Image (tube, rainbow over all chains, first blue to last red; front, side, top):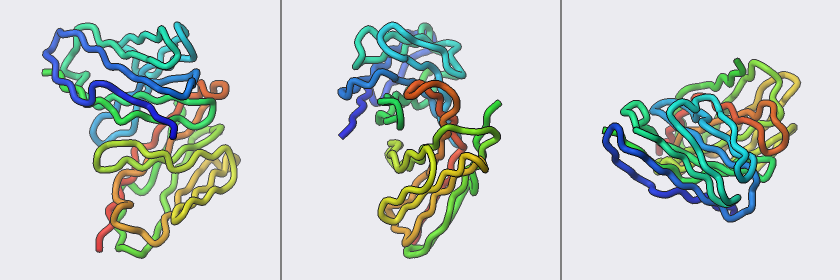
Amino acid sequence: DMKVTQMPRYLIKRMGENVLLECGQDMSHETMYWYRQDPGLGLQLIYISYDVDSNSEGDIPKGYRVSRKKREHFSLILDSAKTNQTSVYFCASSPSTAQYFGPGTRLTVL
Amino acid sequence: GDQVEQSPSALSLHEGTGSALRCNFTTTMRAVQWFQQNSRGSLINLFYLASGTKENGRLKSTFNSKESYSTLHIRDAQLEDSGTYFCAAEAGGQGGSAKLIFGEGTKLTVSS
């Protein structure tokens, strides 16, 4: 089974704190993604990574940065989190066709 | 920009009945994926189609890229089919680097 993992699953932070969300996949997929989902909406793309150290902005990159130093890991970083970054964050990876999603991280910024 | 229009936004079915969900695209898309988001919030892959029709159990999906739409048919609905169904269309890019554009989802409620 194709598996994408995310840590942590739940996180509460205060405004201004730094946040690190981690994603892993064991399928050697080159391409990985970070999305956020807000209530009643579909997913919005934050960043795409085509491989190690090869990242590209998605549709809503402002306030976020990413890091991919190994093919199997893709991190999403919020420097100085804001309350409007409260959301559910999903990571996905793709072998070149379908995208496979992790279970999500529910982030609350107070 | 590129958009995915999904309908209906909500759907109620009795067990054993069926219906269809639809996504219309404002531009030509390369492929479409359908997901079920369950009560835990997990996104479950249902189908990936670059063309034609696929069937899996009580679910069947069609993607017509020329006419810019995709459908998901559910037959003999069961309680566990409840959840929110998303279509997501693949626009541009090469291979796995393509972006997915999500519809806003159809909230399906199956009752006994």
